[in-house]
Length: 103
Image (cartoon, rainbow, N blue to C red; front, top):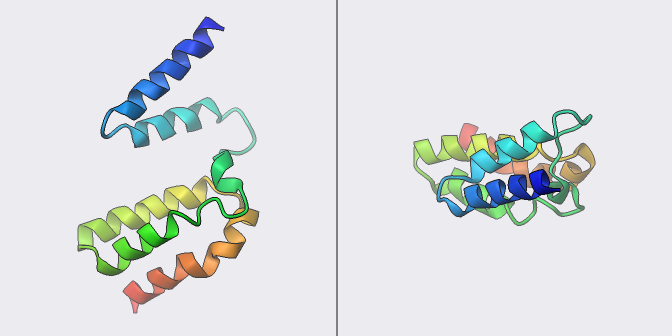
């Protein structure tokens, strides 16, 4: 019980730091690699990634080239942590901006 509490405090401590979100995600993924999948439960809800898509779209369409690159990498991480069934309603919203910047 104490170990679980220490782990939780460590994760929340990392989240309080400014650039800790990728580290916290890596801790979560590494702790759950024993399981069959590494899906983030919140992203697997029916519209779990819908709030993130407008942010990604604006960054891809209006951002500087380095921002676009970081945005696409972020989208890849979100897609990797989301189940296929939850991605299905968002395919058009994900692929549309990507097609626009390629064309």
